[in-house]
Image (cartoon, rainbow, N blue to C red; front, side, top):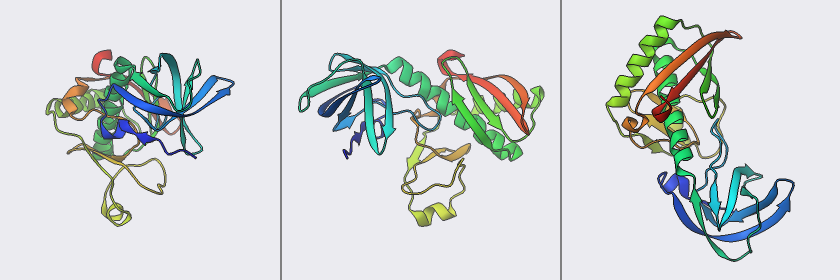
Length: 231
């Protein structure tokens, strides 16, 4: 099994990189390529994968499969060759804005009402968030105002990898029981959450958050929202 270096965690703003092709195999989706390092983020944590160009061919999607980072492309690459990868930065930054804004909204709601985010989906037009409690339009407007004030404070987003002992004393949000190395994303004074996604490094980059709608869903609500350039 190949262990690909995850450049997107070292520098979330890396748009271009060079890597060595470790494996290339044909599959139903075209070709599966494994690299020694990559800046392409794989689908996970409610966030879609990056797309872009690798050695002149298209990267359609990226997945973590059986511990390996697999790039699904529309053409083959020669094993052993060095290639240049370029991620679709417009798409990536949009997803970073959406994901970061969702953290802040979920964090404010959790502090204010004690509700948990129990479902999350990033679509190409809106984000949906499922919460296990009720909110009305007036509360939504108040949450939106509060979140945007926090966004404009432009605080630095802090990412840490606490030890198992440190985790026991840390108050953080998570949708599931976690094992292994846990990545904690801290939006100061707003949210602390275990998350594997990509985020902005300063809250001001989110720009603005807009809460669009709320409907009853199961025992709580489903909320639609957009952030950043989408607003």
